[in-house]
Length: 224
Image (cartoon, rainbow, N blue to C red; front, side, top):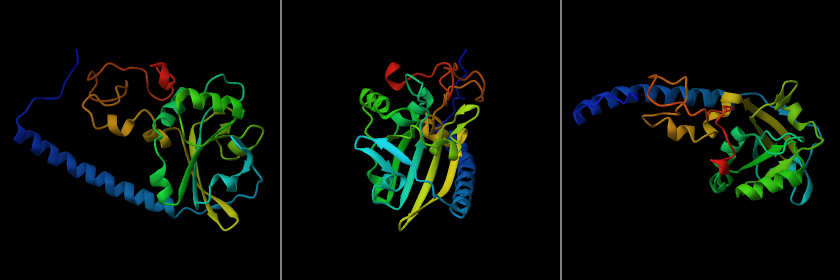
């Protein structure tokens, strides 16, 4: 039986909402502190001559910046021997819309996978995705940035900064570190039924769909 929230008066709801707002403001301040600490991380000079393959052939890591100072790379799980990409990574990709606001802040976003570029291009066309997506086939880029490990492929995001002709690695995060980019989670977290995953409380609120990252119900976005 579905357990819906209590039904109360508008005044009672406003009181409960005000109490929750205190926690939300604490979370916002905590996030600001973490973001500041992230900006203070040291960085590592990237000296490897990586090559990536896209619609116009081979390009360098510096080329991926597309003339901007910052670069965000989605490590998109799509191994060379896979027929299709990771459904969880695809859920993040399906949420990447226009990049104009990132570009206005001097930041470029691309996806990088180890699959050969023709296979990437075919999936990109099938899904209607327009963000830049490159192949690192044959390169050590994914392994060097810990997105390919001995136990397989990991979803992640790496961030780079360009200063003149030099490129620096400033940040990476993996697994739940990128979950807000999956499955429209920030929107679902605002709802009464939440993400509809088995671990959420209150238990029994919604039937788990198995569509969590890596879950058995995950599909490529056009297969739902």
